[in-house]
Length: 359
Ligand SMILES: NC(=O)CC[C@H](N)C(=O)O
Image 1 (cartoon, rainbow, N blue to C red):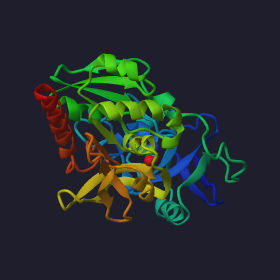
Image 2: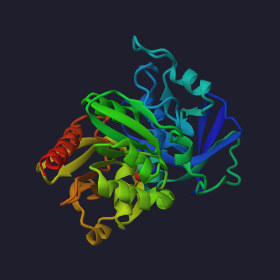
Image 3: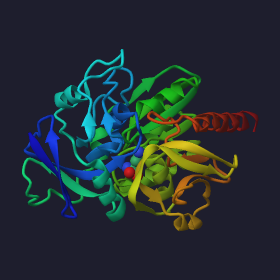
């Protein structure tokens, strides 16, 4: 069946609808991901909630969907647009085809779209709202800017503990990826995952050695009511912020965030580390960024810079144990070149602990 991707700038792209559209049309922000592999992780990363994802690699789904590579319990993307979707998963661990998996979760899959042309629109005009519908007439768009808070929909509602290591991390769940949890567990941590709006007193009662502020969907400013709590928490405990978590550290200290024109979503974003004086390839998925000038009014020092557009990719506090990165050190999908950030975080907590012990 034919279906159409309509962009808010008036451009329409025809494609073939492979799975049903639940309410005859689906609205969302149209963004593109440039990695050649990793579609399963992208589909299940909660940061993509409410977004229509366009994969630029022309063949998606060829290794199918397996039981191991999920980043959360279900897919969060609003819809999927590809050039060609493999009808079969050819990997020996594959359990479903891409199409069957998306169909099971009622997520529209539009194929045979000229994805290069769609990406050119987004690159020149910026990420924009779009919709997939059965009619070639665009008609009215749904909400242009989604009012609902996606974080409330993806965050856990109860406190859960994983592992039994000696270093205890409280992970604020704004829509965390499983790989972040795994990165901590594999380094011998005990991790307590808490809802996005957990109070300072509850955190204190958990007696953590450190805090991890997770990735998550949407505009970081939607969490402005949580910023005083976040500020108090990060001022009391060693903290690592990842992606949305990094943006929240900046906002909590009075810096500003802004929207990138079309975002960074892919597996080969080069980032310069001014401490190690090296460029690392990183996995990324974000539409917002910390405004560099606004950091001048905070104590933070920019450590990581995107080599392509010079945007802020990470920072540290010169006197407090706070470190934050815009990219994804846990990878999945993409390169794990920067996963030593987790080791640094563990070292920071160790230093803080020994100071406390020997003070
Ligand atoms: N992966 C993330 O945490 C994304 C952060 C935020 N939603 C952004 O788009 O910038």
